[in-house]
Image 1: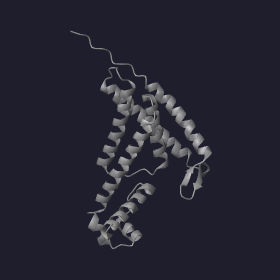
Image 2: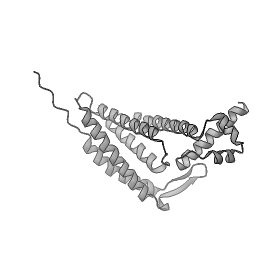
Image 3: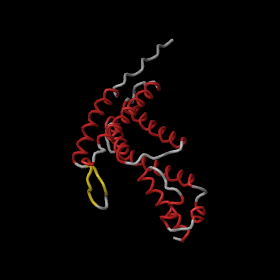
Length: 208
């Protein structure tokens, strides 16, 4: 690897670390100070901070959906796939720093979330005639409930008693009490979601 490539990789890794910790890519001045490189070195690789941010956010979001698909595909039924997807989304919302996205990437991210859930809803009701408005409405209700759950958990888990240092390499993790609370609130959430899942098929159109 050339020194040019090494500098590029170092910038990307430092930016990724900042994104994970705070949800934002560090300022150029902070990046070059951390890496001990001249400012001009940054601009040899990226046009500006916005270009670096877009790259890092797109890669982070792609990783999110790749892992979400692994969790979803680990289930054998459509209903369990929905459950796994919502639990994964809850954990990510609670544990990971919320990424600050520009409007276009925020809309793209939300569209992909909704598209994934709508696909699972259609899989759950394979063979039924489901009107698009009903699928969209149900997906919206489920995601809004999932957001409320994450907000409640963030509030409840803010107390240090819910966290513990699991290992120096792993950092901070949920304590047994924190895990119990997550499980309890998710069970309540899933009971609510389950009531939304048995959607009735749309009535068949009468033949003229």
